[in-house]
Amino acid sequence: MRHDPVRSAKLKELAISADIFNAINGGMSAPVIQMKENEDYYLLSVKVPGVKSSSLKTEIQNGQLFVFHILPLPGNPSIITPYFVKVLKIPEDAITDEMVVEEIDQGVRLVIPKEQS
Image 1 (cartoon, rainbow, N blue to C red):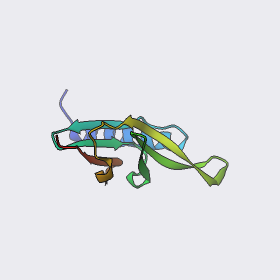
Image 2 (image 1 turned 180 degrees about the horizontal axis):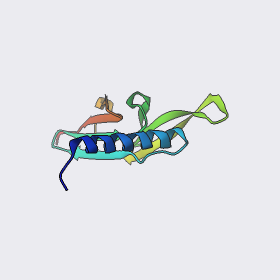
Image 3 (image 1 turned 90 degrees about the horizontal axis):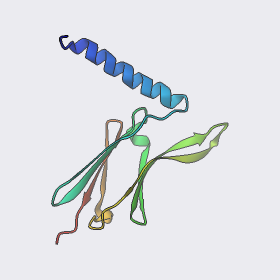
């Protein structure tokens, strides 16, 4: 079977729509997490289909990185609660005070410098 770019684009659009519909109806798509490392820094990207990148938050506490977004409590939208996407252990040589967080399509990218030995 030949590759049909129009059909591929429509299937991708359908999959994204299903993720958004799932999230709206109370479900949550699995986050896609990638971590790369070089000698100078760690590069972590977290994408959550159906969640705006501007809604994702990050926080570091006790050597752990928390990635979450805020949701209104069902039945009482004046109360908000965090929905944790992922909790990751931060490597000991990471300089978390210099972490840079950037918004990317449906997610965030974190650049965390490493201590130089």
